[in-house]
Length: 150
Image 1: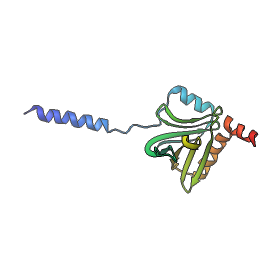
Image 2 (image 1 turned 90 degrees about the horizontal axis):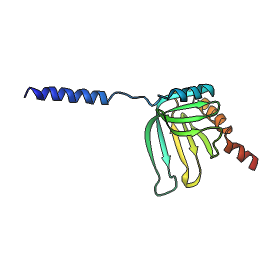
Image 3 (image 1 turned 180 degrees about the vertical axis):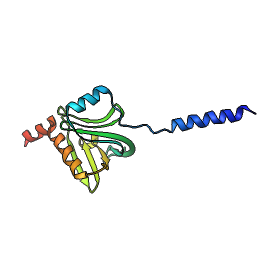
């Protein structure tokens, strides 16, 4: 019987350690150097993102997960730790758009049945965030191609 409290205490300690907050904002040194070279203009850690997929199909759905976002003069990256969930760079050829509804931003990527969106509330200055994301999107290869096609 003396072992039972020790086992319960060890289990409780593991549960408490497992429940510790882990940030989604941790990046590798190489990624941090890249973003510094691109001049970070906005950054937010551990925001709740709503990821919507397969819009307009019977497989449509959404999920909410914490993630972090980095906006530089050239790129927009939504990530969980060093795993990128969405990366928009000057080489990106896809369709991207940002919309704002009061304090919530929605970043749309792709089109048709492959469209996805990432919706979040920035910590402050939603209009400023939207403007900075639009600037980065305007510099993509896809935006340049669409301008030439007009």
